[in-house]
Length: 270
Image: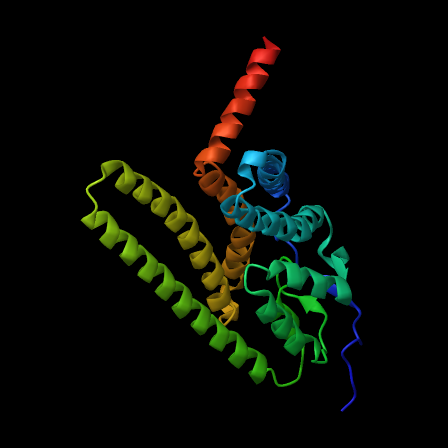
């Protein structure tokens, strides 16, 4: 069999499909979301780095979330903004750039899974060149192949089921243990703090899981491609917008530092 993997080094991306009448509104909304994600997440990273009192294991571990949001958003949203005012026939991306975009777009999963998943895809030859998605993702790339992609589908579905069951199982177990402790505890302040922390975490978790698994599910139904594309964009825009609000303001130390900074700026301006 001829190796056709690099037959099409230049791929055509569908981009964000909007009507000419709504293109400016879509651009403004997406740009506002992008600016907020960058400012909020980078601001939290700077805040944690600059304040010695925040150099604790919990806050250092938390840095992984805004860092992932910044990387994932930067690799996807600027191209979406660029594609809005471009003709569909001019929305090109190189094969290598597409693979790089896939890697960062899938960093919400485990890195080892991402590398193996992409490895299974790039081994395939491809006979098509149109990415039927607003940006490159793994499923859209291996759909370009005319080879048998059963291995890719089986691995993707298997990992999805394992991830879903293990994630839901661990979260359910954790929340059950917290609920038992709160039920036994007579300290209202501790119980209130636990409920507040868990509710914000659960809200962000549900949004990410629903939008993420909706995208995976809808890839199996080509007739629902428009709904899949919308859920794909929401998965990479909504959680990065909510994470700094939910987690950043939830952490008492970070919240206090932010309020102190704003109060200091108000005093200086007066």
